[in-house]
Length: 202
Length: 202
Image (cartoon, rainbow over all chains, first blue to last red; front, top):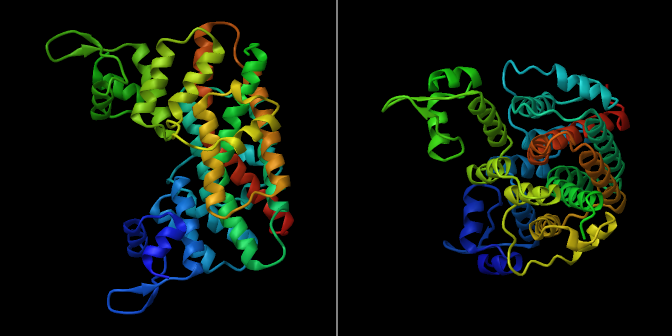
């Protein structure tokens, strides 16, 4: 199909498709003339994935890394998860104290060596931000966060499809990034429900 | 204290403090001369809060709304939660289909009328993004998300301090926004632990 048809099939405007081509997020089509190229269903699928990543707040540079992991998966699923995480995590700062983060890893039932340095750093930064604001998460709430994170992760890892490496790769890479806005939205909606119940509204 | 001392006390550079003053995130100090103003502990506290909001990815415009809610809390805690949510949620798009979002609200034990339109819209958008990527959250995983969201929200709402309206406002406004990066970081770390256990790494 032509670029205009690719645009119709995906709802992504032609100039945006051209931008993704220039940014190497989307592979070039097959040249059919000096000024035209032909695109296939693979491009449609890939464009949908790119779109969803960008809409989830992933930057162009991060999306490029996620896409690369889809195309050239690392040797094991554990390593793949690391790539997916690294793609969406900022570089760790030098000298960041990860002591509190490591303590939480142990409360999650794990050991710090099981975690990518970028993830430990991300957790440490999240804790520092909260502390920096002079805000304290109550002990029972932190307990609920830890419990929820572990239950969610167990369900997600158990859900990795076993039928093919390709579907496992897709699940791990997209399943890491895409559900984040869903989880946050569900928490907020649940807060409103719990608040309405507690304060007897409506 | 002078602006340079305010900077030392908070670690926020003077030009950044001036930017927050211009953006009306931080109240002006008391004028002591034509070119100098004096700041107090209230400014230190407020600056820490602004810093934490910005580091959590909240925009200047959103931070202004959160700060406004801290200064002029709405009449009830349920309404306050709405303000805190609205401050960090994008405006709902016209014509967004919220049917699937409403179904999830019911699975959370609530009714759509209990939720701010911005929150329903946020949930609908998160679902649309996932669907648009051709990704499907497995039924067991979605169940885990819903269960986790409800447990987290129950613990958070139960944790609203009852000693003063001021501390309740602070808890609701900051407790809505600041823990989001923590929750996401905990999920990723828990994924790595669950993955290491499942694939027998280290």
